[in-house]
Amino acid sequence: QVQLQESGPGLVRPSETLSLTCTVSGGSISDHVWSWIRQPPGKGLEFIAYIYDSGRTNYNPSLESRVSISIDTSKKQFSLRVTSVTAADTAVYYCARLKNLGMPAITYHAFDFWGQGTLVTVSS
Amino acid sequence: EIVMTQSPLSLPVTPGEPASISCRSSQSLLRSNGYNFLDWYVQKPGQSPQLLIYLGSNRASGVPDRFSGGGSGTDFTLKISRVEAEDVGVYYCMQAQQAPRTFGPGTKVEIK
Image (cartoon, rainbow over all chains, first blue to last red):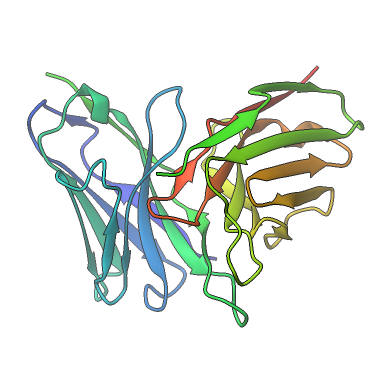
């Protein structure tokens, strides 16, 4: 059973950089796509970014100028950085796997495994 | 970006009774290949979201057959044939037709 575990500081000061890591266990990091999604307290879900095992990336345009996603396949980890954070970046951050469920007919990725989520609070 | 809306936003249900959630997209999610690029997720209390339905109507692994997804184009429905107490949570539709993926606001299902 694939497991994903987020790690990183729970408190970040305004204007600083938020850094999170997701560790994958129980399965391969190769041949899948890996993603970050966040949920502000009491609100809905927002897609942030995803990365292929090859390093190809895709970002939400609303966050692209401040966000970067990276992957270290040897450590079975992928990471998220958000720069110049404000209170609006306070959220539970989830890492998730995008698996191709469309085979053999088409390519279609859905979020089939999620981490438990980690709350990041932006406050001075 | 594609805007997703859901109705109702709150749905009190009686165990054993059916339930239905509507999801609408601002643009068609139907591809020329005939597939609708839409997922349904549920976030049970205190848990992470989990995949229920993908490609509009395909149940994810382990999802009970009382859950079904339907619709096409811009109008979709998630149906629960007979609600059980364990089905409480917030249900989200999400489009994968166009980047960035966007979620609906969620429908909170609770027991009456």
